[in-house]
Image (cartoon, rainbow, N blue to C red):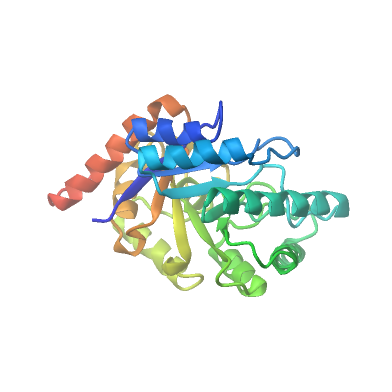
Length: 288
């Protein structure tokens, strides 16, 4: 079983600290913010930053890396000023990923803020193409994250993500990040075999499992179809152990980084051990 488990780790004191703290709890993959997620001001990668980062990679052996973009970015914003600021910020996010040799940048597909789903999808696709067209040297792949569907946020239906990918039409630059809490809150059941198979059938009939490059493993504080994004510790929310057992042992996701974004970084080690135990149970013919 090719299982790559890890977590989103804090970068207080420098981005490289996320790798050391990840290694301490047994991460094989790590996700970070390359800059503050709640500020427009960019935090550039200095030569000293890069040296410390590369040394941390060598020291920890962690090679499976993912970044998440700023929460302020909205690439389908109807307000031109917000959209242009988002374009500048997102291009900078991609450049930092390239500097740090991080292959994937996770982003939420944005909120149409009343313009309508069709208009939001069209605007996002146009904007994403423009970013890569203006900087074709960018190597990092953008991963569109499945969302819970709060407010006017796009990406809570698999059909929306498939349409975005089709309209952007950059198959080497755009793929998907599957978040377990978000898809469950959006109405896709993962808890039992029948629900899981129905969800995977919907996924395969739209963008397909091959497009899923990274998974976020989060339980949900809210019930199926709530459209509320609230993460919970693994096995302690409405999803429960069986959902995660099915996801992490699904051969379609073998070798994909699977990252915790659960509350309280101090509990990441416990959550990782729980996931590994669930995987071992399957190998021994047991299920939760």
